[in-house]
Image (cartoon, rainbow, N blue to C red; front, side):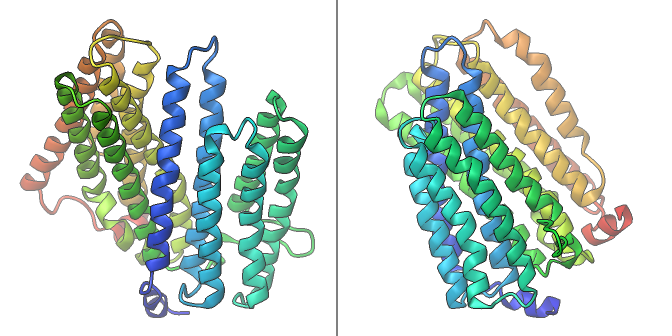
Length: 398
């Protein structure tokens, strides 16, 4: 398969657009669960946040493996379309059960997740689309192994912390298999260099997921504002929208925009693509946390309900900037000073914001993002050719 042949597979991606719409719903469920974690009266909130983070990673891994499949095989083939339908339906069911995944809907969530992870390689094997059939066989073995703690945690521990322990083990197995190439005795493992993936498509899928996450924050802002259309909610809603637009601008400035060219140009697109998957999880988490922080402030723009809110109000943009800095390093082998200054500014402002109204904190974080976007714009106008080309910089790092 040549690069030109792989580019030919970039057409006919309507199935992936449908999958993205399902993930808008899934991310909204994650955000709503996070809001509940931060607003429900509990003595210890960190375990609840950990559960939400685990569920987000499970959804993210499901999306990653679907993106790998559609980057390696023609999405117009019947078996690959069946895989997409399986992932769509499974993701929808997981999203529906997500608010109570650690309660009475845990069995449905775990069974659905396992069915999706087992179903993808099984369909590819039965359809005989994988010339190196052992690649899908390895993934199937690892999915079967992780299924044990997933199901056991759901069935045997309906209301116990042990469910979280077993599901953490199961998720660790899933991520370890992906990172190591699903090593299996006698079959060996799949080297990342051997993955025949459309690098440009991987990058575009990452970009599309960022748009999904940004769109979800707009949806959350709109729904929260519409719940009570009162004058005191106007300012925090405007700040929330501005923050989303600024994250969009910062992400797609240079490194985010040229990511497809960078991945396509290097000898092993899958290697940079795998790294980009992990980097984008950090970025997406930061976007979602930022959106949740704004939703909380729209609900209570003046009264400071909980100091923990500051963790998402300032921590969300900080996570976003950290992930964006890592993406820039992966593409250009350097990090702009604006990213570092922004992170330091958010860290320095945190102690000051503890006793101030939450609207001040969200406005301040948005001003920091605006400063970074302005810095990038000014620097681009002064030095339009300063950034190295992605292919050259990436090969130089390798």
